[in-house]
Image (cartoon, rainbow over all chains, first blue to last red; front, side):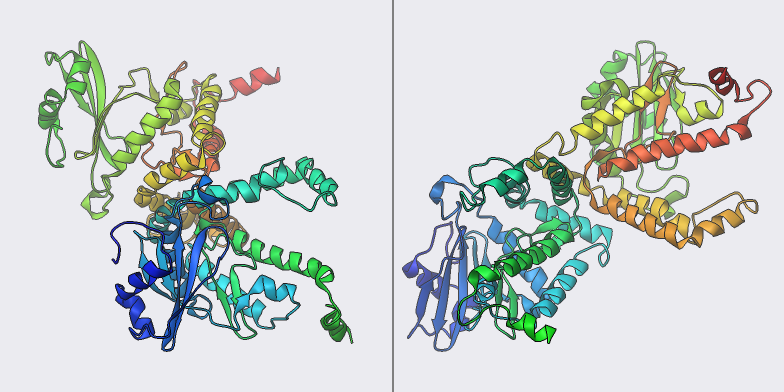
Length: 299
Length: 299
């Protein structure tokens, strides 16, 4: 372990950290000439650094004990890095084709060293907004979900193995609570962190808040989310948790992983595809009217 | 702690144990004159002693590391006594009217000291076979299930409290596996420990084994039993887990307790009542034709 207690890394201390960590420095042949470090925000929760050297590359992801976008006002356990690393390793063991390899994990520093998904990998959401088609995406994501969900469920494992695994991931309770709030509660009531395109969607948002039958259905889904330890799910499988090229599909960021209902992953991904589909008209431009493929199939 | 390592007690060592345990000896006023010890088998898994003295009484239940009826050939963790004691205390805290008080628990010895349910308390199953009516039973059992199940569920508790409790009871995995086998698997296939009244019910047993739609339904229920951590259920709530008088209803033996679906307790109890109802004709005798109450209500 390179550092004896947690501290957020900057670009200087990062190099010091890499030099002291053989599993990382070996990835770049212990050669720091021509090393390039780029900090890339991955969202709200973490620092992410890309390290590229002539002889190799990797990514460092460090979890901070608060939501980055809000600053230190929203505390958020940095132990989530532990659950992310365990999930990456377990899902990666089951489906190495679609999960980036973990090179290094440091629990004290809440720090993961992992494969750099080099260009032309981009976030799937950006690709969908740009109107790019991914003919292998459905097959790859189906394979990822089938392997990770089936093999971590009681369809595959013994009760004893299953309960032991459930116990471990019960520790990721803070991130489960975040999902409960932002997915299953906030959208259905007036809440501080819910946003929509106002005033255009005011009436739609209100309609959802007043739909009691919908809310009963959502409450039922929420109880399944909280109670049903069916498989080790990714827990946040939207189109920004997937990096793609036309040939490669890589699932990242499983920090919300825990034993929950398979349907939460499957539904989140399909739901995001449906959102992307209905957003196509809004993203259409002269170069791509988003209608070609449909026409081709009809002809 | 009276003994530094586990050993099965007999009547002599039991007295030695009580003398060394203030929470027990105080129950009989530290007075061993006129003490009576009676060993009563409670089933297959434990030794149970009733201790009655002029100034008080209690019961000692000691779990053995094997199924008693089969001898040492079927190992069975004695840690189940720990989960039984925790469940008795938690359910007792929520519904003291219908759960016997725990006076003492010794994890090393897998030993519980608890209230002696004095005569005329009898096992409910025996009462039902004898044709006794219990006009308060439905209300008492409803209250027991409502309080213990609601208050240990997410309808009442926070996610953080719930996951912590789920983790603890995941340790009772061996008894969960026993239920999976004897309730959800063995009855639906040819299996060593399944019995029925042969040859009279051979055809019925075979019909069940060949009913594929039924087995699919049972598989669905089994997966809920294994996966849905809804509430701290008793886990074995048949009519031999309840002791009754016309005025008192006491639920005992929650060694199968874990976080599972509420329906497993509710369904087990109602199912046992239905079995008892249909068995009445077989138990009818000259003194009680089992038809009076029905007639009374019809008149």
